[in-house]
Amino acid sequence: MKLIAVSGSLRKNSFNTRLAGLMAEVVPDGVALESLTLHGIPLYDGDLEESEGIPAAVEALRGRIKAADGLILVTPEYNAGMPGVLKNALDWLTRPGEEMKPTFGGRKTAIAGATPGAWGTAFAQAGALINLRQLGCELYPGYLRVSKAGDRFDEGGADDKLREQVAGWLEGFAAFVR
Ligand code: FNR
Image 1 (cartoon, protein in one colour):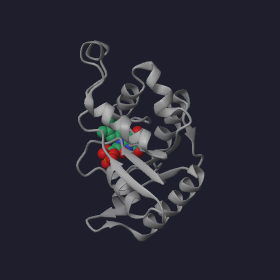
Image 2: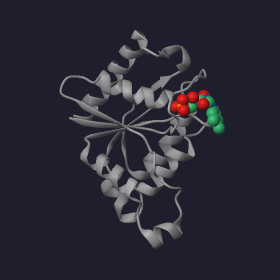
Image 3: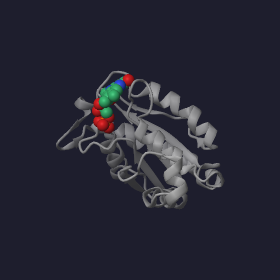
Image 4: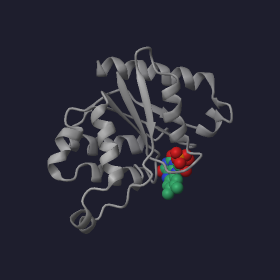
């Protein structure tokens, strides 16, 4: 089984990118997980789409999504929502309109997120449900919310409790994808 985890942060030391990387380390047997970021995707602009078509970085990401059995969005929380970087990528991926269904329709999808704050990106994840439902994703009901991320990650990686939490959550998602 192939899963991809897409981080919604462009920051080098992003907790969410580190969480996506941790997922790749603790996957269940028989599962390969690729962790990706959204670097290189321009802001959605209908004029750009009309003059130059879909950007190569978007098509490359679409290819990774289509090749995967399951998609994980690892979202930061900005002002109680997903960051523009992630929403922008989702918007591009639904263009042209006929690509929405083959990219997202029935796609087994899970949402995760990390924040230094107390609520584990709960608001961003709740908001994302509306968007992902619109896209036709088949949503995994289990959530992974990492609070106080600064205490959970250090230079050596993640603490044991977080590793166990992520491994258990991935077991559940892998079973859902199967
Ligand atoms: C934040 N942050 C934040 N955190 C949170 O838990 N709830 C929120 O509503 C917000 N709002 C918010 C807005 C903006 C504009 C920024 C820049 C930040 C803090 C955020 O969780 C923190 O910066 C994380 O470290 C971002 O994720 P990465 O980059 O570490 O993955």
